[in-house]
Length: 110
Length: 110
DNA sequence: TTATAGTGACACCTTTTGGTTACATGAGAT
DNA sequence: ATCTCATGTAACCAAAAGGTGTCACTATAA
Image 1 (cartoon, chains in turn brown, cyan, orange, red):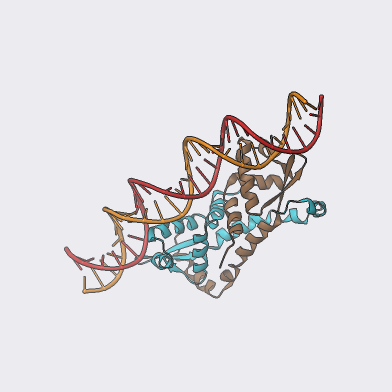
Image 2 (cartoon, rainbow over the protein chains, first blue to last red):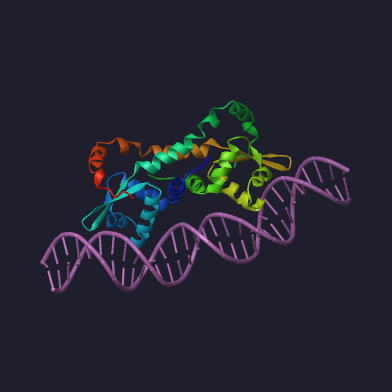
């Protein structure tokens, strides 16, 4: 199975707590860069870098309005991740799952 | 919205092509570390590091059998990621989506 | 025009990641 | 016991990521 660089970037982007928080913020309303960075201790430049990474993973889009840039969630990145995760669904349902369930007790717990 | 360190580790783990390939391999059958590393140019130690990261994100489990360690997919990590992505579903369906769709043409294309 | 506020881009530093080699351990075979 | 093979761990290195401040640019306001 092959994952596009964009989708890889999406997963990578979600592997950071700051970017997770940014997405949560943007799920409430679109925000300019300054508005987003006001919510963090971090410098604006630092937040901007995170926004760039989110954009690279198609998790947000940027809309210019005057001298401001408004950031909004972009469904594309989310869909691609969900699509790839679905690839594994057959594994959980397969007949092998029964065997694995039987052997489950033998697994190391941690 | 808060993401556990484990789930963050899962996303981080998927942000790497090698680890994506390992998961794809394990979706066919469980494999020992040596078997997995045979599929890559990389050293066994390098592969082992990737396996550790996958385990940290609860994407695989390790079962000891004799002197071998068999790696299998673990649904837990996958479910947690899917669960978090679902958090954003209401966003796509919201009435605001209509407004956003109307403004869609104004978005920068790349 | 001039000043100001929001942004983009650059150089820089520190920490983490992705990879290596070398060595220690533990189970199976001889 | 000894030898072998799969694995675990530590030390190390280069490259990438996460953060900073500074400067240039542009659009609004005065």
